[in-house]
Length: 518
Image (cartoon, rainbow, N blue to C red; front, side, top):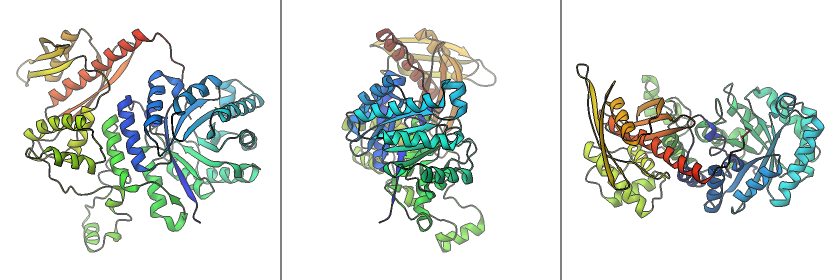
């Protein structure tokens, strides 16, 4: 019987630690539903002790997603484990994922503990987690830089306490494939009870070797890989789920291992994540980049026309890239729109469909054809968890190289209409200044990016901005065929998040515990 590799997706936990990649609860649920369609084996929903928001998102995911194991992260401390269990216990298949560092570097400078003390902490954490939950994963943080014999002692001890999964992370992306493979072999031959647990790896990409390290670990007996959509994550990111899965799929002759992932949902998952976070995939990104199946060289084009196998080792359809069969435009109706969204992986409620249809018609009135990317932006832009304290009614602007840029803005708040105008260095700056005058909540623009998400001169432009409000900053997102409109609404999106934050702070005066990174 062919062995199986389990896919542990940590996009919602480690992936969200990418700068600018934070998602609200509704956005996390949207991505979790797509991960369920992708048929990953485990979804790590977050780090419940880190914030009330993280706790609530893990809990909501655990309550809704029923076919996938739902994990939460916890340090090797009772308070973390209790909080994690409270979040994941509604799941059909809950998992507590607890960790502690094992490298001498971390023991000396971060934990300030001896090896024996850390060994005992690991034992107690797993023992307590096991008393709550049958499925317990233990991670030895910075395992790749740990003394192998000590690492083996820790692993043996936590398996004795009931750990069902043992994760060996390359937390800082330090390992080289040849040595990492040897380390996995060493663990398998020097831990007497290793057969009682599934061996896992979690590789970071600081040297660009996360996927290579994960695959060589699989070749040496690892049967769970921890990864993220598009490879997002702390610093240079994590091992890319789509690259690992398609390597196993394409080179089954070499690996001879089963993987339960539905590869046709890879591209929809990649596109959804991009549109939720604004972290754009590079054009030449393997599997999901826009050039991954593009051929420009004449020799390549000739070969592909004659036989695709000459220059394509997988078909675009295998990962969910397909030509549109429904041409969407201003005459398209709700039924066509619903069907198109189903093709793109969105199961919209009637209310969400109605909201998307209104936005779709606005875009369609300005464009000859609405592309898939437009539709993804529309549904992303329309599903926001944060209450819209301020709504944009209109923005009018003027600018040029011979006149002073001006903008007039009308906002609505609780039924009251408020107008003001301002001048600025350009139409966008003027519009944002007018908003500042109305709301009395001036923010400082820390980052501002615009990208075209569709083709043509009438393309939809997507604006992402990071706005600093003194002690906290938020990401604002919006899209439109008019960049001033998109910029204005993105800025309002950040302001509405700030209003929501202020309300939450007023209700909860509690501080937040710091977080660690596996």
